[in-house]
Structures are given as structure tokens and as C-alpha cells.
Length: 285
Length: 152
Image 1 (cartoon, rainbow over the protein chains, first blue to last red):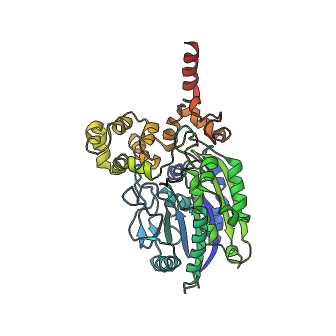
Image 2: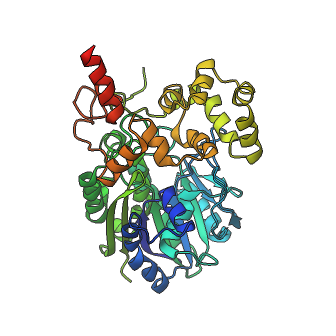
Image 3: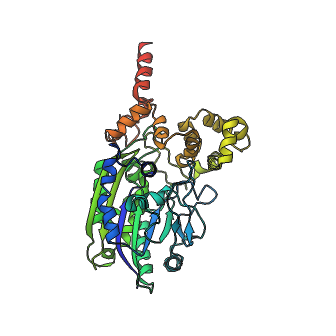
């Protein structure tokens, strides 16, 4: 059967993509950010999955106000990097995993999560920046990716508790797939940031680090944090962090297995307007 | 029964909820249209004429032409949509975010490099943090405005 072997958590700041694409990663401003991912790039090479289930949010790119799905799973064969107004990022196209994605969609919907199924969409920096951070600048991404988009643009976004329960449903779906695939689940977005109004630029390092501590050791408790606490403490766009709980909910310990191993932890301020947080958790074999 | 909106007491923050989204529908859809190069060119050539093609309010059109992002947000705009205007102008997210604080680009960048804006005093309306209404605009522009007001 297929298995979730590890989860990866990272911010997905668009300026990070720009820095990579324009060759600025060694500039003094950016160097400390990318240094935090050196371990991760090596780790991903050593722990190459068959499929990455990548939880992210679209930033008014594939989904405008025409259509606002709360949870959307990509079941397509491939996805093009989107033109977000600056032209598409010069990164490889994203190859999907339609068979596994369709299986997960059916299983998760039967577990009462009413997913939207997407066969055709472009993917924006929310999906491609985490791939760039973890893979560098390859000719092709190392494996197929299932994009899983969460609405965190129009309030109300799904609650932390709902995201955490969804992660558990995804884990069951993956484990009911017959092929012996090694699947990683990535949760992206955050950490503290606010991009609007007089409070723009808010960073709350103490709250972010407490979030990382609890994500590792007390995800069930963390999943009960209310929307308003994210907004007040981590900024209006810090709400993206609920997506990390989807990935965390898919780990074995939540279903009664052993605690995951913390392979890597990194935190840095700033990348543009945002605090960068990053974790790698491994399920034990 | 009315909806629960526990987020109305956060200073300098507008939550893009269903009501804001409804008010800003055409403003945000106009922004989406700027993802096409051809539309960006038409908008740049004559902003007023391009905006008049959309069912936006006059206030929304004026706010776009003034690049007053705080006003755009008050009128239902959302930053991820408004970012398409910034992309058309060649502005970064940092420049756009900074423009809403009254700080100069350098002042805002320095604040971020210094660890960002503190949450202290900025959790609830009525506290005394730098994002509170009585402390706008921020940075040197605000100091100047307050000195002139104090001296008058």
C-alpha cells in the first residue's frame, strides 16, 4: 500500500521565487534564508518520494471571485506555472499524479470532506516556491505532485480543526491505495505576516516559534486555535498557517502511531514582508 | 441572528469576508483582468477609459487611479487581487504593503529587516501601538504631519 513517509512545512513568499529566478540567493539579504534550506535540499535527494501531496493556497490566480472552493484537489496530468502579472516563473511544469489523486479524491469525499475536483488549472507561487526551496533549480521537478488548494483568501477560511481532521482523512486515503508508493505531504504558507493596512509588516516571532513547538508536539491542541487568534497574533495573512495542520494531521502519531522524528527546523525574519518557518518531520518506518 | 465577526477590533486590518467580497466584486475582477498583457497595455494607455468598462463605483475607480490601496481595501478590494495593479506598475509586494503604512519604501524595508512590526499595542483597537488609527501616517511623513498640526 501507499504510505506517507514524511511531512514538510514551509513558507511560500513570492519574493523568494524572484530571488531564486534572478540569481540573488547569495546576496546578504537572502543568503540566511536559503542557508536554512541547504539541509532540506540534501534531505529531499536522500529521501526522494514517489509523489508529493502539496497543500498550498492560490493567490487570486487560478481562482478569482468567479469560483472560491474551500478545498480543491488537482487530479490533472500536468499544471503550468501561472503568469501572476509579472510573467510565469521560469520553472518546470508540474507533473500531476492523476491516478492517486483521483483515488484520494474519492476516498476523502466518502469520508465527508466535500472536495472540489480540478482537472485544469495553472499553479502560482504558493505551489512553485516550496518546490524551488526544496529542489533548487532542476530541469524537471523530482517527482509528480498533487496540488491541493485551500481557500485562505476570502473569510471564513476552514478552521484549524477542520484542516487537521482533513489531514487524517488524506492519510487514510493514501493508505488505502494499493501501489506501494512513498508519499510526502507538504503544508505551506505563513508564517506571521500581514500585507494590508496600517498593520502591514507585522511579525510575531514568539508566537511563530510557539506554533512550531506545538505543531511538533501538540498538534491536536494547536488545531483548536481560533481564526481570530491567527489574525490578531500572526497578521491577517498569517491565517495561511491552518494549511500546515492538514499535513500534520496526515502523520502517523495522530492515528496512534509513534511520534514523528524532527529532521530539521528553521526560522528566519524577514523575507520581504514575512517570517519564514520550515520543518521536516519523518514518520518512523 | 447576525453573523459572528470577532475581527472588527483589530487595528489597521480589514478581513476580506463575504460582505467585503460582495462590495468589491467588480473592483477585484477588474484587477484579475490585468493578468493579461493586452489588458495591462490598454489600462496603462488610458486608465479612466479602461475602468469605465467595469461596473465599479466611482469611489473605487478614483481609489485605483490614486493607487490608494487602503481606500481600495475599504471599498472591498483584497490585497491578492490589488497586487495585479502593483504588478502592472512594476511594484513589489513589499512596496505595496509599505505604501499602506505611510512609511517611505526605505523606512518600511528597514522595519522589516529589523524584525518587522511588533504586535505589542497592535492587537486591539484602543491600544497605543504604531498601527493604531491615532498614529497614522507612520514614519517621517507622520512625524512631519503631527509636528505641523501641533505647531499650528
